[in-house]
Figure 1: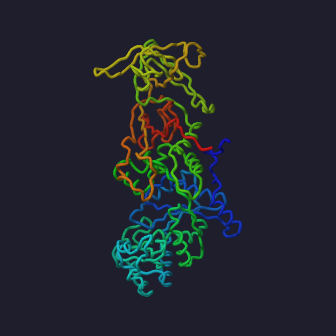
Figure 2: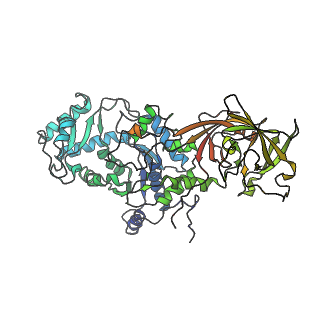
Figure 3: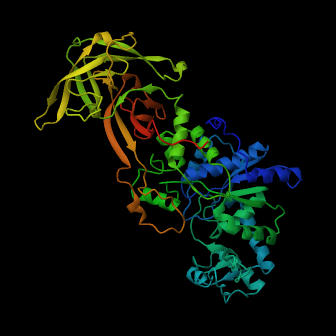
Length: 563
Protein backbone atom coordinates (compact mmCIF):
# COMPACT_ATOMS: atom_id res chain seq x y z
CA UNK A 1 0.00 0.00 0.00
CA UNK A 2 1.33 3.44 -0.88
CA UNK A 3 2.39 5.62 2.02
CA UNK A 4 0.36 8.77 2.60
CA UNK A 5 3.09 10.69 4.37
CA UNK A 6 4.15 13.73 2.35
CA UNK A 7 5.77 17.06 3.05
CA UNK A 8 2.31 18.65 3.18
CA UNK A 9 0.25 16.56 5.64
CA UNK A 10 2.31 16.96 8.81
CA UNK A 11 0.03 19.46 10.55
CA UNK A 12 -1.13 16.73 12.91
CA UNK A 13 0.62 14.01 14.89
CA UNK A 14 0.34 10.31 14.11
CA UNK A 15 -1.33 8.08 16.75
CA UNK A 16 0.83 8.15 19.86
CA UNK A 17 0.71 7.62 23.61
CA UNK A 18 0.75 11.33 24.48
CA UNK A 19 -2.23 11.98 22.25
CA UNK A 20 -4.04 9.14 24.03
CA UNK A 21 -3.24 10.68 27.43
CA UNK A 22 -4.51 14.10 26.35
CA UNK A 23 -7.69 12.58 24.91
CA UNK A 24 -8.40 10.80 28.20
CA UNK A 25 -7.58 13.89 30.28
CA UNK A 26 -10.08 15.95 28.30
CA UNK A 27 -12.69 13.19 28.39
CA UNK A 28 -12.61 12.76 32.17
CA UNK A 29 -12.41 16.50 32.87
CA UNK A 30 -8.88 16.39 34.28
CA UNK A 31 -8.07 19.35 32.05
CA UNK A 32 -10.28 21.81 30.19
CA UNK A 33 -7.74 23.41 27.86
CA UNK A 34 -4.52 21.80 26.71
CA UNK A 35 -1.50 24.01 27.43
CA UNK A 36 1.99 23.00 26.33
CA UNK A 37 5.25 24.89 26.18
CA UNK A 38 8.53 24.82 24.30
CA UNK A 39 11.14 25.80 26.92
CA UNK A 40 14.66 26.14 25.45
CA UNK A 41 17.57 27.51 27.43
CA UNK A 42 19.04 30.46 25.47
CA UNK A 43 22.60 29.17 25.66
CA UNK A 44 22.98 28.23 21.99
CA UNK A 45 21.14 27.90 18.71
CA UNK A 46 18.37 25.36 18.20
CA UNK A 47 19.26 22.15 16.36
CA UNK A 48 17.36 19.46 14.46
CA UNK A 49 16.52 17.65 17.70
CA UNK A 50 14.70 20.74 18.94
CA UNK A 51 12.62 20.72 15.75
CA UNK A 52 10.93 17.55 16.97
CA UNK A 53 10.21 19.02 20.40
CA UNK A 54 8.84 22.19 18.81
CA UNK A 55 6.64 20.22 16.44
CA UNK A 56 5.30 17.92 19.18
CA UNK A 57 4.40 20.73 21.57
CA UNK A 58 2.84 23.09 19.07
CA UNK A 59 1.09 20.47 16.94
CA UNK A 60 -0.42 18.50 19.81
CA UNK A 61 -1.80 21.63 21.47
CA UNK A 62 -3.22 22.83 18.16
CA UNK A 63 -4.86 19.46 17.47
CA UNK A 64 -6.84 19.77 20.69
CA UNK A 65 -7.64 23.48 20.37
CA UNK A 66 -5.11 24.41 23.05
CA UNK A 67 -2.17 26.79 23.18
CA UNK A 68 1.60 26.67 23.38
CA UNK A 69 3.95 29.07 25.14
CA UNK A 70 7.47 29.84 24.02
CA UNK A 71 9.40 30.10 27.28
CA UNK A 72 13.08 30.75 27.78
CA UNK A 73 14.50 28.83 30.73
CA UNK A 74 17.06 31.52 31.43
CA UNK A 75 18.31 30.56 34.88
CA UNK A 76 22.05 30.55 34.11
CA UNK A 77 23.33 34.06 33.26
CA UNK A 78 26.89 32.85 32.59
CA UNK A 79 25.94 30.86 29.48
CA UNK A 80 22.92 32.75 28.16
CA UNK A 81 22.70 35.65 25.76
CA UNK A 82 20.10 37.76 23.96
CA UNK A 83 21.63 36.59 20.66
CA UNK A 84 20.36 33.11 21.41
CA UNK A 85 16.94 34.42 22.43
CA UNK A 86 16.53 36.18 19.10
CA UNK A 87 17.78 33.23 17.06
CA UNK A 88 15.37 30.85 18.81
CA UNK A 89 12.38 33.10 18.13
CA UNK A 90 13.39 33.36 14.48
CA UNK A 91 13.77 29.58 14.14
CA UNK A 92 10.38 28.79 15.69
CA UNK A 93 8.67 31.27 13.38
CA UNK A 94 10.55 29.96 10.34
CA UNK A 95 9.32 26.45 11.12
CA UNK A 96 5.81 27.86 10.88
CA UNK A 97 4.71 28.00 14.52
CA UNK A 98 3.22 30.89 16.50
CA UNK A 99 3.34 30.89 20.28
CA UNK A 100 0.37 32.02 22.33
CA UNK A 101 2.57 33.78 24.89
CA UNK A 102 6.26 34.61 25.16
CA UNK A 103 7.62 33.96 28.64
CA UNK A 104 10.95 34.00 30.48
CA UNK A 105 11.82 31.97 33.57
CA UNK A 106 13.52 35.11 34.85
CA UNK A 107 10.11 36.81 34.97
CA UNK A 108 9.28 34.46 37.84
CA UNK A 109 12.43 34.83 39.92
CA UNK A 110 10.58 36.58 42.75
CA UNK A 111 7.91 33.89 42.82
CA UNK A 112 10.55 31.15 42.77
CA UNK A 113 12.38 32.79 45.65
CA UNK A 114 9.15 32.90 47.64
CA UNK A 115 8.47 29.22 46.90
CA UNK A 116 11.95 28.40 48.19
CA UNK A 117 11.00 30.25 51.39
CA UNK A 118 7.95 27.97 51.62
CA UNK A 119 10.25 24.95 51.54
CA UNK A 120 12.55 26.41 54.19
CA UNK A 121 9.62 27.16 56.49
CA UNK A 122 8.39 23.58 56.11
CA UNK A 123 11.83 22.21 56.95
CA UNK A 124 12.16 20.98 53.36
CA UNK A 125 15.21 23.06 52.33
CA UNK A 126 18.45 24.17 53.97
CA UNK A 127 21.49 26.32 53.24
CA UNK A 128 24.60 24.20 52.76
CA UNK A 129 28.23 25.34 53.03
CA UNK A 130 29.69 22.29 51.26
CA UNK A 131 31.49 22.95 48.01
CA UNK A 132 30.28 21.51 44.72
CA UNK A 133 32.98 18.85 44.87
CA UNK A 134 32.05 17.92 48.44
CA UNK A 135 28.38 17.63 47.53
CA UNK A 136 29.30 15.39 44.62
CA UNK A 137 31.52 13.21 46.82
CA UNK A 138 28.82 12.71 49.46
CA UNK A 139 26.01 12.07 46.99
CA UNK A 140 26.59 8.31 46.95
CA UNK A 141 26.32 5.92 44.02
CA UNK A 142 23.67 3.80 42.37
CA UNK A 143 24.37 1.08 44.98
CA UNK A 144 25.42 3.15 48.00
CA UNK A 145 23.38 5.84 49.82
CA UNK A 146 24.62 9.38 50.15
CA UNK A 147 25.81 11.08 53.33
CA UNK A 148 23.94 13.83 55.11
CA UNK A 149 25.57 17.22 55.03
CA UNK A 150 26.73 18.51 58.44
CA UNK A 151 24.61 21.59 57.72
CA UNK A 152 21.43 19.62 56.97
CA UNK A 153 19.90 20.21 60.39
CA UNK A 154 20.21 23.98 60.53
CA UNK A 155 17.16 25.61 62.05
CA UNK A 156 14.45 27.20 59.95
CA UNK A 157 15.45 30.60 61.33
CA UNK A 158 19.11 30.19 60.45
CA UNK A 159 18.25 28.97 56.95
CA UNK A 160 15.92 31.90 56.36
CA UNK A 161 18.60 34.33 57.49
CA UNK A 162 21.35 32.76 55.38
CA UNK A 163 19.13 32.54 52.30
CA UNK A 164 18.21 36.21 52.61
CA UNK A 165 21.91 37.09 52.94
CA UNK A 166 22.68 34.98 49.89
CA UNK A 167 20.18 37.10 47.97
CA UNK A 168 21.68 40.27 49.39
CA UNK A 169 25.06 39.38 47.93
CA UNK A 170 26.98 38.78 51.14
CA UNK A 171 28.62 35.58 49.94
CA UNK A 172 30.91 34.64 47.07
CA UNK A 173 30.10 32.32 44.18
CA UNK A 174 30.02 28.72 45.41
CA UNK A 175 30.29 29.70 49.07
CA UNK A 176 26.77 28.51 49.85
CA UNK A 177 23.87 26.80 48.12
CA UNK A 178 20.26 26.04 48.98
CA UNK A 179 19.41 22.34 48.90
CA UNK A 180 16.07 20.56 49.01
CA UNK A 181 15.83 18.24 52.02
CA UNK A 182 14.43 14.95 50.75
CA UNK A 183 16.26 11.63 51.26
CA UNK A 184 20.00 11.01 50.97
CA UNK A 185 19.30 7.25 50.82
CA UNK A 186 16.79 7.46 47.98
CA UNK A 187 17.40 4.93 45.17
CA UNK A 188 16.81 7.86 42.81
CA UNK A 189 19.98 9.94 43.08
CA UNK A 190 18.06 13.00 41.88
CA UNK A 191 16.18 13.00 45.20
CA UNK A 192 19.31 13.06 47.36
CA UNK A 193 19.00 16.65 48.53
CA UNK A 194 19.48 18.31 45.12
CA UNK A 195 20.77 21.86 44.95
CA UNK A 196 17.95 24.27 44.10
CA UNK A 197 19.73 27.67 44.36
CA UNK A 198 23.32 28.75 43.80
CA UNK A 199 25.20 32.04 43.98
CA UNK A 200 26.25 33.57 40.66
CA UNK A 201 27.48 37.16 40.55
CA UNK A 202 26.85 37.79 36.86
CA UNK A 203 24.74 40.15 34.79
CA UNK A 204 21.59 38.52 33.45
CA UNK A 205 20.36 39.34 29.92
CA UNK A 206 16.82 40.01 31.22
CA UNK A 207 17.13 41.05 34.89
CA UNK A 208 20.52 42.79 34.79
CA UNK A 209 22.19 42.80 38.22
CA UNK A 210 19.01 42.50 40.27
CA UNK A 211 19.82 38.95 41.31
CA UNK A 212 22.97 37.18 42.44
CA UNK A 213 21.27 33.90 43.29
CA UNK A 214 19.68 31.77 40.61
CA UNK A 215 17.41 28.71 40.78
CA UNK A 216 18.61 25.45 39.29
CA UNK A 217 16.79 24.34 36.17
CA UNK A 218 15.27 21.27 37.85
CA UNK A 219 13.70 23.48 40.54
CA UNK A 220 12.65 26.31 38.26
CA UNK A 221 11.13 24.23 35.50
CA UNK A 222 8.18 22.69 37.38
CA UNK A 223 7.43 26.06 39.00
CA UNK A 224 7.34 27.73 35.59
CA UNK A 225 4.95 25.09 34.28
CA UNK A 226 2.69 25.53 37.29
CA UNK A 227 2.73 29.33 37.12
CA UNK A 228 1.77 29.25 33.44
CA UNK A 229 -0.96 26.63 33.84
CA UNK A 230 0.81 24.10 31.63
CA UNK A 231 -1.21 20.90 31.57
CA UNK A 232 1.15 18.57 29.73
CA UNK A 233 4.86 19.20 30.23
CA UNK A 234 6.45 17.30 27.33
CA UNK A 235 10.17 16.56 27.34
CA UNK A 236 12.64 13.91 26.18
CA UNK A 237 13.26 10.69 28.09
CA UNK A 238 16.56 11.96 29.50
CA UNK A 239 14.42 13.85 32.05
CA UNK A 240 12.41 10.79 33.11
CA UNK A 241 14.52 10.26 36.23
CA UNK A 242 13.83 13.88 37.19
CA UNK A 243 10.06 13.43 37.15
CA UNK A 244 9.84 12.42 40.86
CA UNK A 245 11.63 15.64 41.81
CA UNK A 246 9.40 17.59 39.41
CA UNK A 247 6.34 16.23 41.22
CA UNK A 248 7.95 16.82 44.63
CA UNK A 249 8.59 20.49 43.84
CA UNK A 250 5.00 21.03 42.68
CA UNK A 251 3.57 19.40 45.79
CA UNK A 252 5.92 20.76 48.46
CA UNK A 253 5.92 24.36 47.21
CA UNK A 254 2.11 24.20 47.33
CA UNK A 255 1.54 25.42 43.78
CA UNK A 256 -2.15 25.86 42.95
CA UNK A 257 -1.69 24.32 39.48
CA UNK A 258 -0.46 20.75 39.02
CA UNK A 259 1.15 20.13 35.62
CA UNK A 260 2.30 16.64 34.72
CA UNK A 261 5.46 15.66 32.90
CA UNK A 262 5.49 13.15 30.03
CA UNK A 263 8.61 11.98 28.21
CA UNK A 264 9.16 11.02 24.58
CA UNK A 265 12.19 9.59 22.78
CA UNK A 266 14.42 12.34 21.45
CA UNK A 267 15.55 12.65 17.87
CA UNK A 268 19.06 11.29 17.24
CA UNK A 269 20.63 11.51 13.78
CA UNK A 270 23.58 9.41 12.71
CA UNK A 271 26.82 11.32 12.09
CA UNK A 272 25.26 14.33 13.80
CA UNK A 273 26.34 15.98 17.02
CA UNK A 274 23.67 17.89 18.93
CA UNK A 275 25.47 18.70 22.18
CA UNK A 276 25.34 22.49 22.56
CA UNK A 277 28.72 22.39 24.26
CA UNK A 278 30.28 20.65 21.29
CA UNK A 279 28.48 22.79 18.75
CA UNK A 280 29.77 25.87 20.56
CA UNK A 281 33.26 24.36 20.45
CA UNK A 282 33.00 24.09 16.66
CA UNK A 283 32.09 27.77 16.49
CA UNK A 284 34.70 28.96 19.00
CA UNK A 285 37.51 26.90 17.42
CA UNK A 286 36.69 28.21 13.93
CA UNK A 287 35.92 24.75 12.56
CA UNK A 288 32.75 26.30 11.11
CA UNK A 289 31.98 29.91 10.23
CA UNK A 290 29.21 30.32 12.81
CA UNK A 291 26.14 28.68 14.30
CA UNK A 292 24.46 28.97 10.89
CA UNK A 293 27.22 27.20 8.96
CA UNK A 294 25.45 24.90 6.47
CA UNK A 295 27.32 21.90 7.92
CA UNK A 296 25.84 22.52 11.36
CA UNK A 297 22.72 20.60 12.49
CA UNK A 298 21.24 23.86 13.79
CA UNK A 299 17.92 25.08 12.43
CA UNK A 300 19.65 28.20 11.14
CA UNK A 301 22.36 26.07 9.53
CA UNK A 302 19.79 23.87 7.81
CA UNK A 303 17.93 26.98 6.65
CA UNK A 304 21.08 28.53 5.21
CA UNK A 305 21.97 25.27 3.51
CA UNK A 306 18.55 25.21 1.85
CA UNK A 307 16.30 22.92 3.87
CA UNK A 308 12.65 23.91 4.04
CA UNK A 309 10.29 23.95 7.02
CA UNK A 310 7.99 21.57 5.14
CA UNK A 311 10.74 18.99 4.70
CA UNK A 312 11.82 19.18 8.35
CA UNK A 313 8.26 18.81 9.64
CA UNK A 314 7.58 15.89 7.32
CA UNK A 315 10.76 14.27 8.62
CA UNK A 316 9.83 14.60 12.30
CA UNK A 317 6.31 13.39 11.49
CA UNK A 318 7.80 10.24 10.00
CA UNK A 319 9.98 9.61 13.07
CA UNK A 320 6.81 9.54 15.20
CA UNK A 321 6.29 9.96 18.94
CA UNK A 322 7.24 7.16 21.30
CA UNK A 323 9.48 6.48 24.28
CA UNK A 324 11.89 4.44 22.22
CA UNK A 325 15.50 5.54 21.90
CA UNK A 326 17.11 5.05 18.52
CA UNK A 327 19.15 6.71 15.84
CA UNK A 328 17.73 7.88 12.54
CA UNK A 329 19.54 7.53 9.23
CA UNK A 330 20.56 10.96 7.96
CA UNK A 331 19.36 9.81 4.54
CA UNK A 332 15.77 9.99 5.79
CA UNK A 333 16.05 13.74 6.34
CA UNK A 334 17.63 14.07 2.89
CA UNK A 335 14.75 12.07 1.40
CA UNK A 336 12.20 14.62 2.57
CA UNK A 337 14.03 17.64 1.21
CA UNK A 338 14.21 15.92 -2.17
CA UNK A 339 10.50 15.18 -1.98
CA UNK A 340 9.75 18.81 -1.15
CA UNK A 341 11.93 20.37 -3.84
CA UNK A 342 11.41 18.05 -6.77
CA UNK A 343 8.33 19.96 -7.98
CA UNK A 344 9.34 23.37 -6.61
CA UNK A 345 12.93 23.92 -7.70
CA UNK A 346 13.72 25.10 -11.24
CA UNK A 347 16.05 22.73 -13.07
CA UNK A 348 19.02 24.45 -14.66
CA UNK A 349 22.57 23.66 -15.70
CA UNK A 350 25.70 24.51 -13.76
CA UNK A 351 29.31 23.58 -14.43
CA UNK A 352 31.17 23.13 -11.16
CA UNK A 353 34.63 22.21 -12.52
CA UNK A 354 34.78 23.80 -15.98
CA UNK A 355 36.61 22.65 -19.09
CA UNK A 356 36.29 24.81 -22.21
CA UNK A 357 34.97 23.28 -25.43
CA UNK A 358 35.35 25.01 -28.80
CA UNK A 359 32.88 23.81 -31.44
CA UNK A 360 35.02 24.46 -34.48
CA UNK A 361 32.33 24.14 -37.15
CA UNK A 362 29.84 26.39 -35.38
CA UNK A 363 29.71 29.90 -36.97
CA UNK A 364 31.97 32.41 -35.24
CA UNK A 365 30.12 35.34 -33.67
CA UNK A 366 26.77 33.53 -33.76
CA UNK A 367 24.60 32.90 -30.70
CA UNK A 368 21.24 31.17 -30.74
CA UNK A 369 18.63 30.72 -28.03
CA UNK A 370 17.50 27.22 -27.19
CA UNK A 371 14.27 26.25 -25.46
CA UNK A 372 14.48 24.34 -22.17
CA UNK A 373 11.83 23.33 -19.68
CA UNK A 374 12.26 24.67 -16.13
CA UNK A 375 11.02 21.47 -14.50
CA UNK A 376 10.15 18.38 -16.53
CA UNK A 377 7.90 17.13 -13.70
CA UNK A 378 6.02 20.41 -13.31
CA UNK A 379 4.79 21.93 -16.57
CA UNK A 380 3.38 24.95 -14.71
CA UNK A 381 6.94 26.21 -14.22
CA UNK A 382 7.15 26.85 -17.97
CA UNK A 383 10.23 27.12 -20.17
CA UNK A 384 13.32 29.29 -20.40
CA UNK A 385 15.72 30.22 -23.18
CA UNK A 386 19.42 29.50 -22.89
CA UNK A 387 22.17 30.80 -25.20
CA UNK A 388 24.35 28.51 -27.29
CA UNK A 389 27.44 29.47 -29.25
CA UNK A 390 30.81 28.29 -30.50
CA UNK A 391 32.38 28.13 -27.02
CA UNK A 392 30.88 26.38 -24.03
CA UNK A 393 31.96 24.94 -20.69
CA UNK A 394 31.44 21.32 -19.69
CA UNK A 395 32.36 19.42 -16.54
CA UNK A 396 35.99 18.33 -16.49
CA UNK A 397 34.90 14.87 -15.38
CA UNK A 398 32.77 14.57 -18.55
CA UNK A 399 35.91 14.25 -20.66
CA UNK A 400 38.63 11.62 -20.55
CA UNK A 401 41.48 11.32 -23.01
CA UNK A 402 41.93 7.61 -22.32
CA UNK A 403 38.63 6.37 -20.88
CA UNK A 404 37.84 2.97 -19.34
CA UNK A 405 35.28 0.69 -20.94
CA UNK A 406 31.63 1.71 -20.62
CA UNK A 407 32.58 5.38 -20.31
CA UNK A 408 29.92 7.04 -22.44
CA UNK A 409 30.81 10.68 -22.07
CA UNK A 410 33.21 12.72 -24.16
CA UNK A 411 36.55 11.35 -25.39
CA UNK A 412 38.50 11.61 -28.65
CA UNK A 413 36.37 10.25 -31.48
CA UNK A 414 33.24 9.84 -29.35
CA UNK A 415 29.92 11.65 -29.76
CA UNK A 416 27.57 12.77 -27.01
CA UNK A 417 24.42 14.82 -26.72
CA UNK A 418 24.53 18.25 -25.13
CA UNK A 419 21.45 18.63 -22.93
CA UNK A 420 18.82 20.77 -24.73
CA UNK A 421 21.24 21.28 -27.67
CA UNK A 422 23.13 19.16 -30.25
CA UNK A 423 25.33 16.13 -30.69
CA UNK A 424 29.02 17.02 -30.52
CA UNK A 425 32.07 14.90 -31.36
CA UNK A 426 35.54 15.33 -29.86
CA UNK A 427 38.31 15.81 -32.42
CA UNK A 428 41.28 17.52 -30.75
CA UNK A 429 42.72 17.96 -27.27
CA UNK A 430 44.68 21.07 -26.28
CA UNK A 431 47.18 20.77 -23.42
CA UNK A 432 49.43 23.14 -21.53
CA UNK A 433 53.18 22.78 -21.07
CA UNK A 434 52.66 20.41 -18.17
CA UNK A 435 50.45 18.09 -20.17
CA UNK A 436 47.18 19.17 -18.55
CA UNK A 437 44.10 19.31 -20.77
CA UNK A 438 42.98 22.95 -20.98
CA UNK A 439 40.62 22.87 -23.93
CA UNK A 440 39.02 20.41 -26.32
CA UNK A 441 37.84 20.97 -29.87
CA UNK A 442 34.66 19.39 -31.16
CA UNK A 443 32.32 19.51 -34.11
CA UNK A 444 28.53 19.55 -33.89
CA UNK A 445 25.80 18.12 -36.09
CA UNK A 446 23.17 20.80 -36.80
CA UNK A 447 20.62 18.13 -37.73
CA UNK A 448 20.54 16.81 -34.14
CA UNK A 449 19.07 19.87 -32.44
CA UNK A 450 17.03 18.93 -29.38
CA UNK A 451 13.32 19.01 -30.11
CA UNK A 452 13.82 18.81 -33.85
CA UNK A 453 12.52 15.27 -34.10
CA UNK A 454 15.87 13.87 -35.20
CA UNK A 455 15.62 10.07 -35.35
CA UNK A 456 18.98 9.15 -36.83
CA UNK A 457 21.85 7.59 -34.92
CA UNK A 458 21.78 7.20 -31.17
CA UNK A 459 24.33 8.26 -28.58
CA UNK A 460 24.68 6.80 -25.10
CA UNK A 461 25.87 9.87 -23.23
CA UNK A 462 24.18 13.17 -22.40
CA UNK A 463 26.18 15.89 -20.67
CA UNK A 464 25.33 19.38 -19.46
CA UNK A 465 27.06 22.61 -20.36
CA UNK A 466 26.97 26.41 -20.06
CA UNK A 467 27.56 28.86 -22.91
CA UNK A 468 30.89 30.59 -22.27
CA UNK A 469 30.42 34.25 -23.27
CA UNK A 470 27.36 34.82 -21.07
CA UNK A 471 28.12 32.35 -18.30
CA UNK A 472 27.82 33.72 -14.76
CA UNK A 473 30.82 32.98 -12.51
CA UNK A 474 29.66 31.14 -9.42
CA UNK A 475 31.03 29.49 -6.30
CA UNK A 476 29.80 26.07 -5.27
CA UNK A 477 30.07 24.81 -1.72
CA UNK A 478 29.89 21.02 -1.57
CA UNK A 479 29.32 19.28 1.75
CA UNK A 480 29.96 15.95 3.38
CA UNK A 481 28.92 15.00 6.96
CA UNK A 482 30.81 17.04 9.54
CA UNK A 483 31.41 14.00 11.75
CA UNK A 484 33.54 11.13 10.41
CA UNK A 485 32.30 8.15 12.37
CA UNK A 486 28.87 6.73 11.75
CA UNK A 487 27.99 5.87 15.32
CA UNK A 488 25.30 8.09 16.89
CA UNK A 489 26.30 10.29 19.75
CA UNK A 490 25.28 8.72 23.05
CA UNK A 491 25.60 10.12 26.52
CA UNK A 492 28.36 8.38 28.44
CA UNK A 493 29.73 6.51 25.43
CA UNK A 494 33.52 6.32 25.21
CA UNK A 495 34.74 8.20 22.17
CA UNK A 496 37.87 9.76 20.79
CA UNK A 497 38.42 13.51 21.33
CA UNK A 498 35.64 15.37 19.62
CA UNK A 499 37.72 17.54 17.32
CA UNK A 500 39.49 14.41 16.03
CA UNK A 501 36.15 13.19 14.73
CA UNK A 502 35.75 16.15 12.36
CA UNK A 503 35.74 15.31 8.67
CA UNK A 504 38.49 17.39 7.00
CA UNK A 505 36.57 17.10 3.71
CA UNK A 506 33.27 18.33 5.11
CA UNK A 507 33.52 21.42 2.86
CA UNK A 508 34.85 21.67 -0.69
CA UNK A 509 34.72 24.97 -2.56
CA UNK A 510 34.59 24.91 -6.35
CA UNK A 511 34.46 27.74 -8.90
CA UNK A 512 32.52 27.38 -12.10
CA UNK A 513 29.61 28.82 -14.03
CA UNK A 514 25.82 28.90 -14.16
CA UNK A 515 23.37 29.89 -16.87
CA UNK A 516 23.04 33.66 -17.49
CA UNK A 517 19.45 33.63 -16.31
CA UNK A 518 20.70 32.98 -12.78
CA UNK A 519 22.75 36.16 -12.42
CA UNK A 520 20.00 37.74 -10.29
CA UNK A 521 19.44 34.71 -8.07
CA UNK A 522 18.53 35.81 -4.56
CA UNK A 523 19.55 34.33 -1.18
CA UNK A 524 17.46 31.25 -0.38
CA UNK A 525 16.52 30.68 -4.04
CA UNK A 526 16.69 26.95 -4.70
CA UNK A 527 17.60 25.09 -7.88
CA UNK A 528 18.17 21.60 -9.15
CA UNK A 529 21.40 21.51 -11.11
CA UNK A 530 21.36 18.82 -13.76
CA UNK A 531 23.25 15.74 -12.48
CA UNK A 532 24.67 17.59 -9.46
CA UNK A 533 21.84 17.94 -6.97
CA UNK A 534 19.74 20.56 -5.24
CA UNK A 535 21.43 23.86 -4.38
CA UNK A 536 20.52 26.96 -2.39
CA UNK A 537 21.83 30.50 -2.82
CA UNK A 538 23.90 31.25 0.29
CA UNK A 539 22.61 34.07 2.46
CA UNK A 540 26.01 35.08 3.85
CA UNK A 541 28.50 35.08 0.97
CA UNK A 542 26.46 35.37 -2.21
CA UNK A 543 26.69 38.71 -4.04
CA UNK A 544 24.83 40.19 -7.02
CA UNK A 545 26.41 38.92 -10.22
CA UNK A 546 28.52 36.33 -8.37
CA UNK A 547 26.24 33.86 -6.60
CA UNK A 548 27.40 31.33 -4.06
CA UNK A 549 25.51 28.05 -3.99
CA UNK A 550 25.28 25.56 -1.12
CA UNK A 551 24.71 21.91 -1.95
CA UNK A 552 21.51 20.94 -0.15
CA UNK A 553 21.43 17.30 -1.16
CA UNK A 554 22.45 15.08 -4.05
CA UNK A 555 19.88 13.97 -6.58
CA UNK A 556 19.69 10.28 -5.76
CA UNK A 557 19.85 8.01 -2.76
CA UNK A 558 19.34 4.33 -2.10
CA UNK A 559 17.22 5.23 0.94
CA UNK A 560 13.55 4.22 0.91
CA UNK A 561 10.86 4.75 3.50
CA UNK A 562 9.68 1.51 5.09
CA UNK A 563 6.41 0.16 3.73
